[in-house]
Image (cartoon, rainbow, N blue to C red; front, side, top):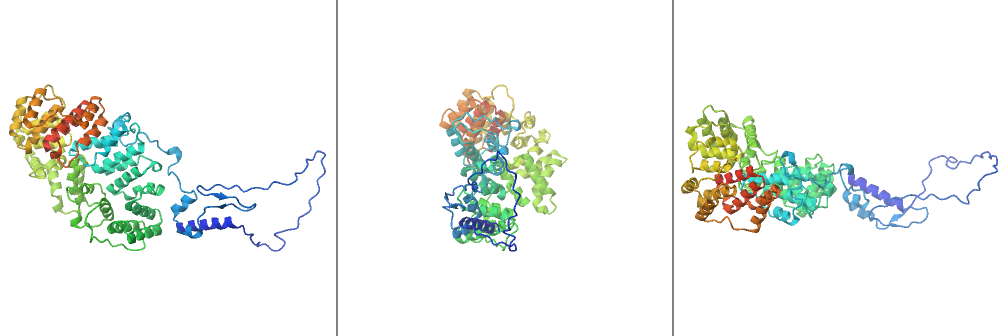
Length: 607
């Protein structure tokens, strides 16, 4: 309908400029040209001004059309645009092209007086735990660009993830020499790769659509897909539809058109995409089904999974939004980044969200409180069978069982034989409620590790008098202790090393690196133990020199970015004690002592 009105209006404009036809009068003869009635002659004035020789002819005022060359017209005729498309060409144009031809497409969707300046872009202010807005303003753009562009994978550390997310989400000014829009796009890209689509979406929404560039548009598109908020990109899509030229961007353009009331245009565009193979068939079919939900779909769409070999963010997001059953062979595996995204999709079945919650908590995406809320929803849902509520039942017992041993037993059933760090996050507050009891001393280490997974260091310190020197629980508390006077005795460390059964004595290596980074180990002992375990804390690289200097100058935001760069990997077996040492020391020096202690303790707990 809108397309037809546009073409009709354009044709009318063309025909009116080519000829000015004289309309036929509908009045009876004599009414259109009445005989003039003589008027009385006024009395002559002695000072009457002479009449002009001829009255000036009024010239029509025409507003120039952007991009259209106007050729001189004959007197009395309207000017004809010299490069106006033919009628056939106009009929083939879509509304966006007609808008652009006649200069009718808006350049912004927010009134000038309400537009936001490109400063302090972010979602977490200084009073909310964010970093100062000027933290990176004086840093060279090349350094910040390299740190952000180089962070391409999730981090091994839950606490490192939380710290980096906080830095990326802070209201920051762009570094010297960097476009603020590019800075926002780089940060959103890292958040997307970390699995923090919700934070990335909030970040890109802090930039007006009129200021988007292709880089920010791509980051925003991925954020909206990752969170299942598909039409969230539509304001940018409709204002700047030419920012990207990718298959899925064009599919989204059709979806946005459908939700903007242009159902027929959307249907036509998606039919063309299907016939031309613009994108994988399954992706186009999902787009057709989703666009049809706007209310003007004229046909049913059958989703065919035959021939689909892998699940992509687009496929998963639209499938969840449409409530489709995904074949088991295509369900994201637990070690994939897509697996965690199920937690963020509101339309994902609750049981499936709970299944993915462990990985999300382990990586730092979900907090302990969010985990408890999710399991509580599962327990309270009357439509879910009891077979799917076993873990929720055990979590409830961990809180309400009358006997501390029964509560600990419930937690142990959740941890399993090989404790998953996500389950330690889940039970953190239940562990903090346990009384300090000698009968529970043998299980003190996992209880302490669970509390530290949620940052409950002061609750964990209540167990300090119960753990034996040189044990796993002692090592965790030696790192997590908020305040410590004096160095850790070498004899206790020696006892820990002798009892460490971890692969390659990784826990011992991390313990030495963490204590040295926190300044809790005598320099001589640090050198002696590191030599004994076969690593060197003194070796320098460009990265270590950069993070050391950032720590010395007490720039926590820069330290956080560089720490994230150095903590990438699929597991703690990819982390070296030397990297851990530089990260912990720089964090401690820059005023992030709590984060330094939690990262060091996590390394020993998960090593």
